[in-house]
Length: 254
Image 1 (cartoon, helix red, strand yellow):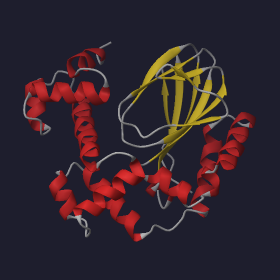
Image 2 (cartoon, helix red, strand yellow):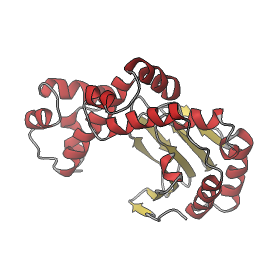
Image 3 (cartoon, one colour):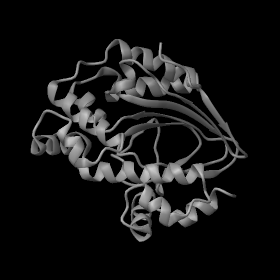
Image 4 (cartoon, helix red, strand yellow):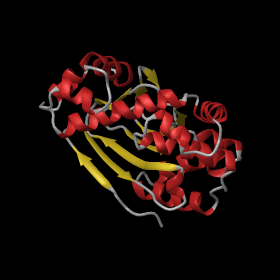
């Protein structure tokens, strides 16, 4: 059984529960989550270069102004933060994989991520709309998780190096496969280049530091996170997170 984080976040409009698996399942799945809206609202889904599945159980959902249809929606690889809006009383859930996992699992014809498998999970969620239903799904996933090919192991090794904020050149050197092969494999599996993934993780690191200390001097933050200057930080922040760091910091005080 995966470890339980069951983080519950409550505010005036949304109750959100999240569970992060470990073990073999944790190599593929970042988290599963369940949300119930007490009133209409909007949230930003952070950019992480990964894919996921959204399940609409009740009410209405839009993702970047595109209406989500029941029973489920497969998200494209995340290149920018996405705006998720929900109606009052909406119930929805999700599975978030790590980068480059979704396509590999589909190609392995993994039953729980097939169209029929996802439809079955959506029906189970409608019958029992709770985080526990997704935790049970994780147990089913763990029982049939495929073995990784050598190529996929190298792909994930490189992505893990980038997630740990290692410079791209150092990340390539840490994986025993030539750079061109790694570039091709990462792009085939994630639809993103290693260079773009490195950009995402660097800006997410800056975002976390700003969240930890909204009063941080942006010029100092830029240098601490490996950007050439504050203007470089601002461009990357806006391009990937769709908001400037200054505006993001001000929102943290609201």
